[in-house]
Amino acid sequence: AQKVTQAQTEISVVEKEDVTLDCVYETRDTTYYLFWYKQPPSGELVFLIRRNSFDEQNEISGRYSWNFQKSTSSFNFTITASQVVDSAVYFCALETGANNLFFGTGTRLTVIP
Amino acid sequence: EPEVTQTPSHQVTQMGQEVILRCVPISNHLYFYWYRQILGQKVEFLVSFYNNEISEKSEIFDDQFSVERPDGSNFTLKIRSTKLEDSAMYFCASSVQLRGVTEAFFGQGTRLTVV
Image 1 (tube, each protein chain N blue to C red):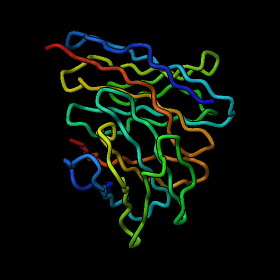
Image 2 (image 1 turned 60 degrees about the horizontal axis):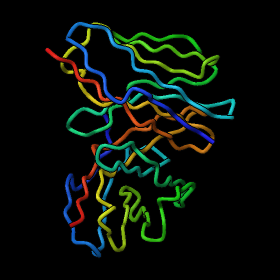
Image 3 (image 1 turned 135 degrees about the vertical axis):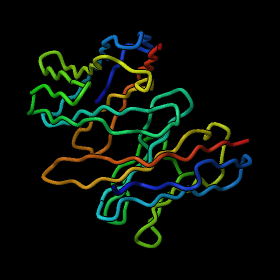
Image 4 (image 1 turned 90 degrees about the vertical axis):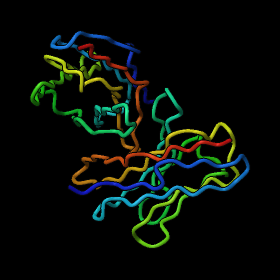
C-alpha cells in the first residue's frame, strides 16, 4: 500500500527565514516517483518537482531545494529566504506503477511579512 | 506554455441534479485524470483514463461517476445525482509518459458546490 505523510499541518515563519517541509512516504514498489505541488490561495495545483526513486541527488532550483533520502523514505523540501508569495499549501505526492498520484495531507505555510 | 483548461471554474447545483465538469487536456497527452479535493483536505485520486477507457479508479469513483472523451479533445466527469458530500474542488490532469516518467499537469480546478 502507498502512503504519504506530511506531519506538519501548519507552519508559520517570518519573511527571509528558511523553512523545511517534511514528507515521508511508504511503498513496496522499487520504482516510484515523488512530487511536490504548491497550492496557492487561488486553489490551483502548481507542479514544483518530480524525482524518481533511482536518483537520490539533491536538487536546487533558486530558493527551493529538495533532499531525497531513500534510507529514511523522506523527500523534504526547503525554501530559503522565504517570501510572502511562498504562502500556500504544499503537497507531497507519490506515484507508483499504478500511474496515479497519492497525495499527502498538505502543509499550510504562512510567511509573515 | 500549454495548459490544462477546466470549465466552469465554479458550479453550483442542487442536490440530486446531474453535473458535467469539463476539461481540455494538453493536446499531445495520452493519460487523463480526475482528482478531488474536499475543502481543507488532501487531493484524492478519482480515476485515470487511457486509450478511451478507464485504466484505474478509486473507491470514491462509484456508479454515480462516469468519464468520457466525447470528441477527442474534451475530457468530462459526470456526476449523475449529486450529493451534498460531492461538494469539492475537482481537478483534471493530463500527462504524457515518456520512458516511464510521468509528469501530471493540473488544471486550475472546478469548485463544485451542491446545495
